[in-house]
Amino acid sequence: MSNSSSITQFLLLAFADTRELQLLHFCLFLGIYLAALLGNGLIITAIACDHRLHTPMYFFLLNLSLLDLGSISTTLPKAMANSLWDTRAILYSGCAVQLFLCVFLIAAELYLLTVMAYDRYVAICKPLHYGTLMGSRACVHMAAAAWASGFLTAVLHTANTFSLPLCQGNALDQFFCEIPHILKLSCSDTYLREVGLLVVGVCLDSGCFIFIILSYVQILRAVLRIPSQQGRHKAFSTCLSHLTVVSLFISTGTFTYLKPLSISSPSLDLVVSVLYSVVPPAVNPLIYSMRNQDLKKSIRKVISGMDLNTGKISITLQK
Image (cartoon, rainbow, N blue to C red):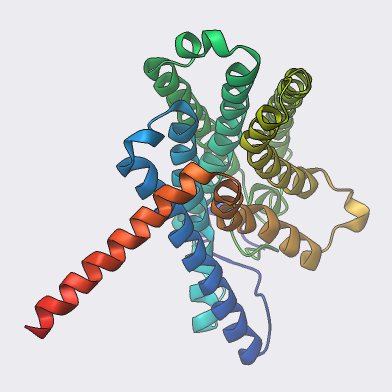
C-alpha cells in the first residue's frame, strides 16, 4: 500500500508481453502517427497558404487539425517509446501533464466541432446573414472560446484528480493517463468530487451533442428544400465530412466513459481508447479532403511545391 506522496511514477498498460508483438505495435503506431502528422500538416499548410481557403469553414478546420496534431502527439509518442524500450513507466509529473493535455485538447475539439456545426447551420439555413454572423472577429472569438473552455476544463479535472490520495498502487489499466483509471487508485471518498465533475462534463458534452443534432436537423430540412440537385449535392458534401467526424469522435468517447461496468475489461478499454484518441486525428484529414475539391486542389499545390523545391535542392547539390 502506498499514498500519493510516495508515488513517483505510474505503470501504464502494456500492449503485449512478447518482444515481437511490442515491436509490431511500435511499427503500427509509428505508421499511424506519421500519417496523422502528414495529413494534418498538409491541411494546415494548404489553408494557410491558399487565400481562397481563408473562410470561416477552413479557419475552423485549421484549428481542428492543430487540435488533432496535439492530441495524437500527447499519447502516441510515449506509447511508442514504451513499446520500443520495453517499459511501462511514466513519471508522476509526466502523467499529470499528459492527462492535462488530453483533457484540454479533446474537450476543445468537442467545443470546436460544435462551433463548426453552427457555422454549417448559418451557411445553409441563413445564407443572407452569413457574412454578419460569421465575420472574422466572430470566428476568432468562437475559436478562442473553444480553446479557452478546453483549457479551463483541463485545469479543473487535472487539479482535482491529482489532489486525491492514492493508495491502490500505481498501475493504470490504460496506455496513457486517463481520469477513470487514476480514480480507481484512490482510497478516499473525496473521489466523489471528481465523479461530480465528470457528471457535469458529460452533461456539457451531451448539450454539445444535442446542439449538433438539432443543427443538422435544420440543415437537412433546408437542404431538402433546395430545388436543384446540384445544389443539394454540394450542401450535403460540405456537411457530410463534418458529421462523419462528429459521429466517430462522440460515439467512441461516449462508449469509453458510459459503457456498463459488466462489459468493462482492460483489453476492451484499450481498444476503445485507441478508437477515440488515435483513430480520429489520423483519419480526419482523409475524411475532410475526400469530398472537398477546393481543399484537394490546394493540397496538390502544396505537394507539387514540395516536389519542385526538392528538385531544386537536388540540382543544387549536384552542382
